Every structure is written in structure tokens, then in C-alpha cells.
Length: 553
Image (cartoon, rainbow, N blue to C red; front, top):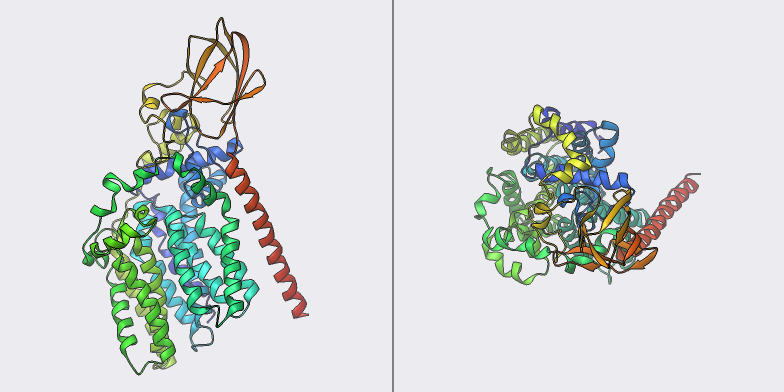
């Protein structure tokens, strides 16, 4: 049976059935939906890729789109246009991502096992069932509204598929690896760090330079290509992070020191967990590793994946606190239970390996029974998560879309994040609630200035002023390197007020003042790098297909 078996996709669709009842009322529902809507508003205003959320903080704005991974927002925003609903756009995105994850997991596992077993297709399906029905992924999708993380976990197997393809078709493998890394990086910052670490380890294990230098070089080329393609996102994150309040991500109630849970909770059915089935898989994997009757190659592969899974289980325990304190960026994960995503991926691969071991001892007629049993076990393991699902009430859902218009977002108290971590460091977290302009971008002036608004949009403001003496105009916009200020056609450097807003000095007499939203310098450079890399990737894909057609002739 072909590894793209339709039944696997039917199971994938079945995991999305709750979405047919209504959009998930996840823990971050009130943050996720306005965030998608504001991303759509930024696209409509002419930003691509978006970098500034003009309507957040009462219109003072936010550079959140420079830091928050954009892929799920982009998918949902684009789909919401023909569907005329942000909720529907997000729901369809979740369905599409679920189907893609099934395809990528099967492709990765089948490629990994190709030539080592008579049943790579069935082993690939086993892995897909374990992964798609992981309680943690279902929790991301249906309970937490953690859609950015879910998106990255769906694309992670694609990167490994490319890495394994390098063994047989190096050029194609490097291109798929680059695409997988690109999609993961622009899906979720933190998951990308884990995936890159796993990929680096895997590269050293299977393409160690002294043993397979060509494979190593193709792998490095794939990784480098993916990072260059995604440069438009991650380069500005590093360039501008010192200007933001990213320290809030690891302080207070988000400090990982107080968020470790008992080990038993990892394999429980309470809250965010992976359920009991992965524990069974890990125990069986230990038995296989210790069994001398198992071929050495299989034992080595199982042992390697098992060690990786146990490392991520260990990182969820308080015993790992030394690592959390020593490893850079690890505290940004905040919640140790976020390591359940990698555990789900690795235990799915282990499940496929265990099937390979069992298949060598069983007759073919038993395999269908094994597959049915695995599906039943996966469904039973995930059932508590499905039972926790709550949808947005129809009455409330009907009110959501009107509340996502730009003017509604400006009038709302929502900031689309739990804290103010994407607020510029010098900005007042309370000013925007206390003082909002009646019209246009002007908050006030000192001394009072007569002014008239001539043009107004998210990206361009023009107004005329008249004053008898030099004055300072206070804008209701946070100071950040995305604004270009001109007074009487002359480019001037904005000053920053004590509240972190933009101030502009105007001379006595009549003046024309313009304020333009422009792509920040680092993002412009990174956009160019990504554009070149994506163009090179497309050329590489075209060349690969051309060589294939020539070879077939």
C-alpha cells in the first residue's frame, strides 16, 4: 500500500472534527484572533511582510510582527479573505496543517526506513497515527490556541524528510531540508530552536564529515539555505530585541523556576501532557535496546532516538534546572512542558521503529490488525483531550468578526499578548489607556498648535500646522525605527517623549508635517537576503525537475 494511503488522511481529518462544531475557545483565543486580524489589516495597508501592528495599543501601534513568527497568521489572514471570517480562516488553516503533518511524517519515516524493512509504508503510517493523535498536538490545536507552535510541529517532519533524502537524492534532499527549516523558523521561534538542535545532532550522526563528507556538505547547504530564506524574520529579532521588553518573557509568573511539574504529569491525561501511550513506547524501546536478539543496526537507531526522547522528558523535571540555567535561550521556553512537542515527534519515530522490529517476526496477515490496534490505542490516548474541547458560542462567534475591524481593535483593550513584551522598552504601558487622540495621530502639542489633517492612513499621515512660536507636537505613536518624519519636506529625526512616544518640533508659522511608516532598515536588508535565497531555491527546484525529465527521456 502506498504511504500516501487515503485512510491516514481520513484519520487526520477526524482529529479536526471538533472544528466543524465551532472555533476552539482556547486559553489564548482572545489573543490569537485579534492578532490574526491585525496581521490581515497590516497586509491590507500595504505591509509585506508586515512589521507593525498599527491598531494595537489604542492606535499607538506595536512592532509585534517583527518578533512573532508569521506563518500561521499569514495563512489564516489570506484564507479569511475569501471566507470572510478570521475564525473560518484559522480553522481551515488548522485542517490544512494537520493533513500536511500526516504527509510529512510518513514521508520522513518511509525515507528513513527505505531499504531496511519490507514494510516502510506501514511503519510510516504507524508514526503518523502516533503523531497526529498526540494529546499535546491536539492540545495545541484545540485547547490552547497555541497555533504558532502547532504550525511548527506540523512542518518539523518535513525538515527531517529532506535530511534523510540526502542519502539517496542529495540535491532534492537539500532543497526539501531548506524548505522545512524555512517553514519551521517562520512558524515558531522556540520550536525552531529545538528542531535545529535535533537536525544538527542527526547530521553529525548520519553524515559525520569523516565518513560521509558529501552528505554533510549537502546537509549544511540545506540548513544554510533555510536560514537564509527565513532571514527576513529571524535577523530583525536579534537586531531589535534589545529595544523590546523581552525580559518579561522570563519573569514573574512566566519564570520557569516555578513551572516544573511532577514527572508523572508528563504521561498523564491531565492538562497538557502526552498521555500514557508514549510511556509504553519508551518502555518497549528500552526492552528492544537491551535485547541481544535485535539486530545491532536497529538497536542503535532505537537507542539514539530513545536517548533524545528521554532528554526532552528530563528537561521537564526540576532535576534539569541546572541545564535551564546554563543553556542560552532555554529559559525563553517558559513552560518546561513545552518539551512535550519534541517528545511526541521522537516517540512517533520510535513507534515506527518498534513496528519494524515486530514486523520481522510476524506474518503479513497480522499487520492490518496491528495497525487497527495502534489506531485504537492512539484514539484512546487522545480521547481526554477531545473531551476537554470547548467551542466559541455561536452568538459570540457572530460578534467576533465586527470586533476585528481596525477601528474596533483600536478601541479595544486587547494587546494580543499576555504581557507587554512586544512594547518598545521606553513606552508607557498605561499612557495608551489614559490618553487617546480624538482623530488622526496627534496626541497634543506644547504650546497648543492649530492643525488640520490632510491625509491619514495606517502608513502615511500629513497635516498642516500653524503656530506663533516653535512648538512640540506629540504623536500617539510609539517611537521605534519604523517612522520617517518630515517637516516642510525636510527629513528630521524624531525625538522621544518621556512616555516613549514620538515628538516633532515645528517652527513658528505654517508648516506641513508628514509621518510615514517605513520598513525598518534591518528588515529591508534581511528581506533582500531572503528574496535572493528564495529565488535561488526556486531555481534549484526547477533545475532538479529539469534533470529528472531529461533522465526519464
